[in-house]
Length: 135
Image 1: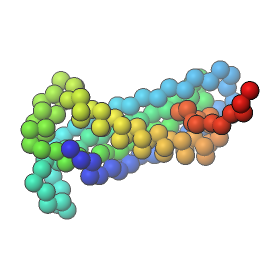
Image 2: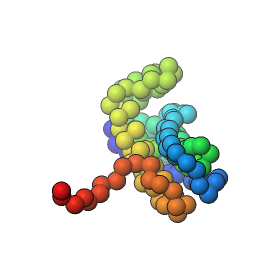
Image 3: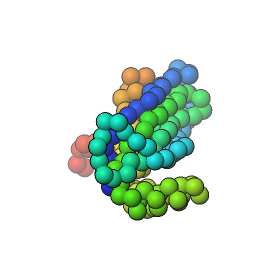
Image 4: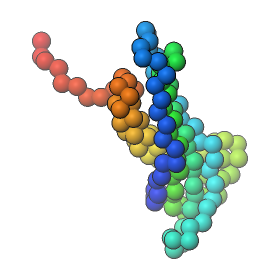
């Protein structure tokens, strides 16, 4: 199972208010579609699966929102492709595929969201490493 393509299709960041007390930051990740696909550019023997995703960061109450959408293309063997598509009909995924999919999307989307949030002068939505003085 290999990731052979990753594309953002929508990048949206909007600051709705200047300041808000007690900011709550929520992130959401959704996969609206996973399907078998073909590529005129790739000549491989394995099956291709395309997973669409939507990653959202909401700054509540009503401060800002970030929406990132895209697609991930996977090369998988026929058995894995059949299992993924079979389970997807029930909105489930095999554990190995789900872990890879979520990790790839979170890594790329969280970094892109950090950049967008920084441009809007919003607090970071994921913990970053910090250096502290010893006591």
